[in-house]
Image (cartoon, rainbow, N blue to C red; front, top):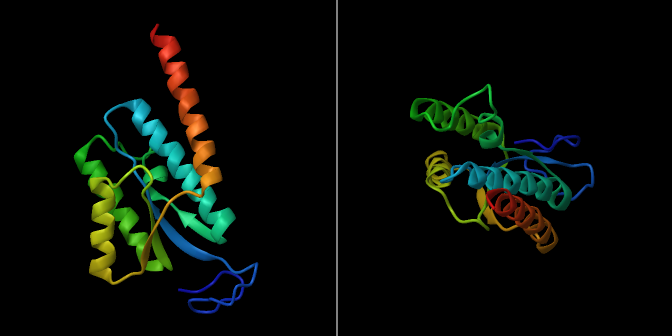
Length: 151
């Protein structure tokens, strides 16, 4: 894999303008639409963490392919297509990053299996404390709104 800008293979020179492509794996599927929304927001925070704290160019297929007019994650055949398409991108990424603050889902476990199968680098991360606190603030607001609407 090559670094954006300096074009070195597996660049580790620390230049500020060097950026690596990474795949993000984070939870998506959930028992409720609210749970899915919380997972989507978490994935967005994971993307910000990659960009801001690691100078990486993240790709999160589970946040892209599940958009309203793309694929329906609740339909097994479409979910399988989306997972396969996301795994295909792993071949051009420097590594896969698993964000696990919310745990590991079956889909993420398939992602780890794919990393091992392909022999591609991967690592496990948590959101930085500041981003985690911000994420929790958003989630608490969602919970408050839901509780208020249900009263």
